[in-house]
Amino acid sequence: MGLNVLVADDEQPVLDELVYLLDRDERIDHVTAVTSGADVLRALEADEAAVDAVFLDIAMPALSGLEVARVLARFRNQPKVVFVTAHEDHAVDAWDLDAVDYVLKPVAEDRLRESVRRVLGARPADPRDVDADEVVAVELAGVTRFVPRSSVAYVEAQGDYVRLHTVSGDSHLLRTPLVTLEHDWADAGFVRIHRSLLVDSARVREVRMLGGRCTILVDVGGSSYVELQVARRHTRDLRTLVQQRARTVGS
Image (cartoon, rainbow, N blue to C red; front, side, top):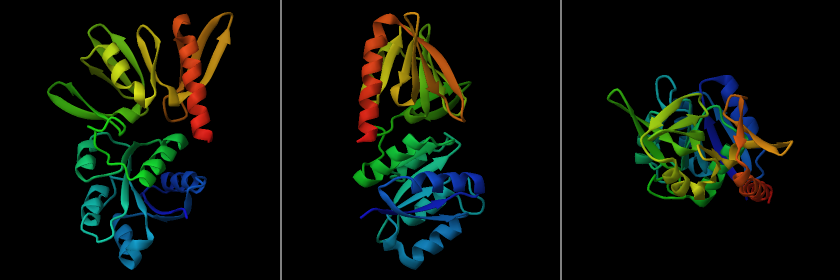
């Protein structure tokens, strides 16, 4: 028996896209769409046991996704919560509310499928869990922002720092060696392609070979891609990892 999910977003085009992508997932039986936090509560109060998971936009008027999640925490039969948002700033609040996942817009289908997997596995979304989505704290001019690892498309070494390039188009400097992230994020599918580049292999859309030179096309969100060069010594490992992940998704 598949999942019954409830999706809430006040922007109709985004809501329609989420419903379309979730409907395509064979692990989901039924998708209900609403446009406000109040509608989420009304639907759940009618029959909370019938909903397995709620995909919540955070920035909804009147009643935000975070406020809805706090109400759901008091339910006898609590549905799993996945936050879907255009903003990275509420990641820590999401972990505190025991969200299963925290997904940034625009949402890729494979990323949404990963959220469904986490719902089915009831995996706690604790950044201390190596298998969950890690949150990285970055600082700029006295302001600390929390960047989910899942939002990072690729990482570029810059001296004593690395620059995290995210699918929202932002980039963030982090004072850590690239080799540290290569080790810490290996289990999440990040692979070294160059002495100065680390890439999320799940976002590799094409591997191009031309005249002995290898490049990859990386999905950086919003139907945008960036082409990155792969060093010869890393080509075989990259192609092997991408093929393994493709087989895993297809199985």
